[in-house]
Image (cartoon, rainbow, N blue to C red; front, side, top):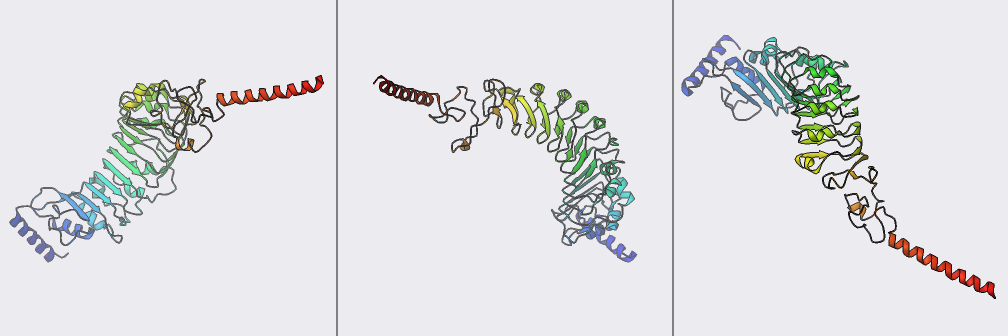
Length: 413
């Protein structure tokens, strides 16, 4: 834009200010918003515009207001994010968000002023070919969210470390369903982190003890990756945890006793792993626990919980543990959904052979006198009942006696 056009634009904005009483938007930033897709029908200040593709929040500066927060939503497939537009917005922009916006990000690294000034960056199902290196330049972020967006990452085993290596102020980090691979970092450079969600990626290897350097973390979600090894006993050092989700990995071993030292824990999800051993009884002593998922593992022995404890939970899942059972004198069948009852030796009672009736039934029967057999002619294990066996034996004996008498009569003659 030449000097004359810029001068006329400023006069127009000042006229709007005089008529409305609200300071107009900085002319250069208005042009930047237009370049990013601000519709011509939206008002010149763009800060009070109704929901649309481009939504901005502005400060109360004078003589011109400036954009502090920008959200681009439902962009066109052909839209692009101009580096020049970002540079014009950079002096005042603190929060930048993309949602359902499959535009291409600038090929170059983010402008230096934007990288240093931005505090929150969010990208949901947006910005194809977004790279870990591009994100790593946003060094002063306190919040970073990348969800349902495939990062254009390399073959490095330290891709996550590349992203967060310089983000010392980071408090909330979500990189979910983002094609992230490699291993969890052994060194974290964001000591203020309270929320960490790395679910739905391809992160492999074990969970390092150094994760406990994140002393203030309250929400930890590492689900749906390919993590292996044991749950480290040092997990008990994260005493502020309210949510721990390690489900859908290949973790093995027992639940460490140190989990009992997490006083604030409300959600514990360990489902769909290869955990084994007995379920620790200390879980029932964790008064804050509200959701407990242990399904699809290899736990054995008896469920160590009372009906009172399970009634306190919003969620309890333990199905898919073939060697696990519950004591029917302690728990009703409806409380231990998907778990077989124990026999008198403490082993799971196998379900009866499939029949038309048993296929309709969701419960097991341990044959211990808690209910009648499913059919008058069969016992709880699917075989003939005692009465039927008695009659059969009696008839067999009678037939034998008749044959014996006939033989004796023939001999006596």
